[in-house]
Amino acid sequence: MKIIKYNAPEELFSSFRCLESASFLQNFDVEIVENYSTHKELATLAKADGLDAQDNGRLICFFDIGQLFHQHKLWLKCLPRVKPFYSVRCNGNEALLQILNRLGLSFECKSKAEIESVMKVGASPEEILYANPCKTAKQIQQAMMCSVRKIVFDNEDELYKVKRLFPTAELILRINVSDPTTAVLPRNLNFGCDPEIEGPSLLILALLLDLKVIGISFHVGSNCDDGTLYAKAIAQSRRLFDYAAGLGHKMRLLDIGGGFPGQNAAKFQTIAEAVNRGLEEHFPIDSGVDVLAEPGRFYAEKAFTLCCTVIARRTVPANQITKNEADRNLFGFTYCINDGVYGSFNCILCDTGKPVPSVLKVCMRNLFAL
Image 1: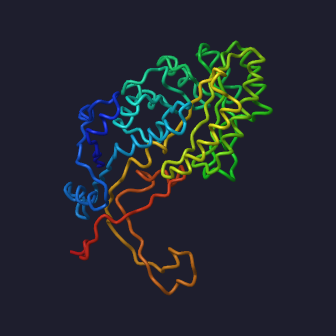
Image 2: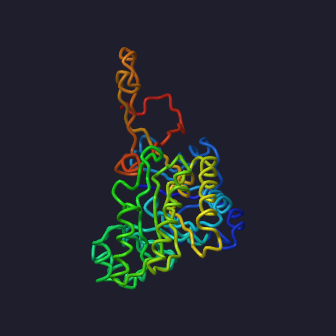
């Protein structure tokens, strides 16, 4: 069982008029705790809930709403032109979605379940981007029934499905721009068309099918280290914008995707500077183009802390841990905790997650002996 606790001092909420009070969190069957700022304070709170080796089925997740507000202010400061569409797959916690909705964020969804979750907290269909470029016929029908019109595509088959099932959709062409040398996890290995070859032909096909293409989308990859990759992708998008406009498409939206770091503010600011330069050169304010992005970890990563319990340990040759044969005659410990890659740490398998553990409590007695 995972318990969610919220650090939600009222003075933080009063700084955002759209929130007014933390009282709405009570609607989510959560517990609001007092301020905490150190691991020692976290340990005290965890102990109060009985988190120890004798109760190894329990997990406690602390949501520091102050960190979320800090990230939002950083985004508004560094990327004032770029409308954030929070990537729901990153963390779909209902209270998190509620707060982001009240802060004025829109949402990027990949499934019907994600669409329903954000509409449940008050998001309107106009504030939702259905960013999965390969959808089943049923998923397209579901988008139509939910009135979610902004839909991403990257192939011919998708255009034919949309023509048959949702011809009034507002389509956004996803292009492949990722560079495996600059992104920790390239996102375009499976999605996105070639902007030089496939892109123009798809825009022509959409015109022949009398479908409305309104913009271009790209994703440079998760945890991208190089801001110039965004600038290059923006330039590529400009060329396709001009081509599409020449065909008669009314282009008005640019989606610069995600990949923004959540832990390193300096790196984010450097990337933001490159994005702003690219936008100023290719999509100036008077161009009439709306710019959006799909941040996920940027908002959620720093705000959540998971408290786990060590439930077992093994003594092993140290070289198994250090990968250094010189340590073969030494020994070390591997620890087993009450969560894993099929739970809260799925990001290790599916993304670039590298969780850093911190000891909350040191116990000198053997917790596992009879």
